[in-house]
Length: 316
Ligand code: AMP
Ligand code: MG
Image 1 (cartoon, helix red, strand yellow):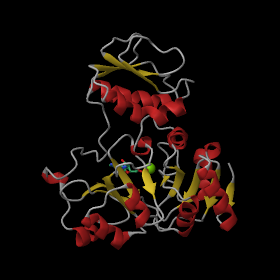
Image 2: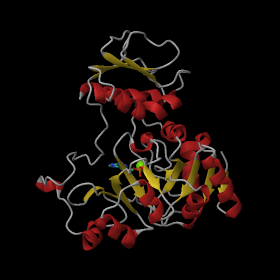
Image 3: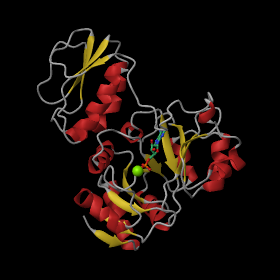
Image 4: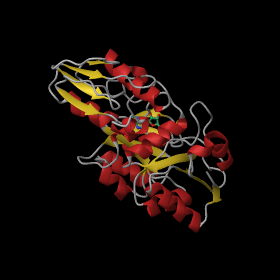
């Protein structure tokens, strides 16, 4: 890891690192982000690994401008008005992925939606522009630590997991972006942040009110995204597989006898497994079997987040 003053040469180097699948921490107007090429599943998996969270939270995908956002998600009229009013800026819009969207399913934790925003910081915009790819980035701190508003915070919290830290001084806003769900009949705030409800309502009309039990509001009062789960029942830690079962395998010693099989990582690598998890869960869900049987995954590092997601699917 190396901390660099964010001059043109450092930004170019950081962009090349992103394109090569490495992680780069960079300043935005809200907090420092831990960025990866959003199209590269293993790079996105490395972000979750670096954060050390025992579960997959969908990440915000950062773009250089609205046109780049329109390439990956489907905008509505109100979403376009909000983007025109507040981008670049601390507003994140949750919108449906477009068909053929190249962003890794892991970046959105398997959901059909993606959270997108254009940050209002010259270093962030220069980096994303130079990288030429959507950049998935949560706050650049280890899970449970406070969000970093200075490059030194990132260095202290994440250290070696990051290939490069671009030092752009202290973040101006210091609070995170407002996350707005634009997929319902009315916009709904999933996380309060830098843009207030009043300013949003002035542009996009009345917000859904979850306190009133409003049907247009997100069902989870914890304001977290719903989690992706399969329709097909799933069982974990399978040590055998039936012909009516779709097998989610891991490692070299694949169980025999399943009706369909996909291997998260023949080499037994957790990063590869995380990168494949949601696409393979979807494919096995569509395989027409009565159950999905998942082989044991080591419960360490990214394996904890993989097991967390399998456990939720098993209990739903
Ligand atoms: P952070 O990366 O720390 O700024 O947090 C990102 C926030 O955006 C979290 O609260 C996520 O739950 C939320 N988020 C990201 N993607 C989605 C999505 N597709 N649907 C709903 N919420 C999302
Ligand atoms: Mg955070």
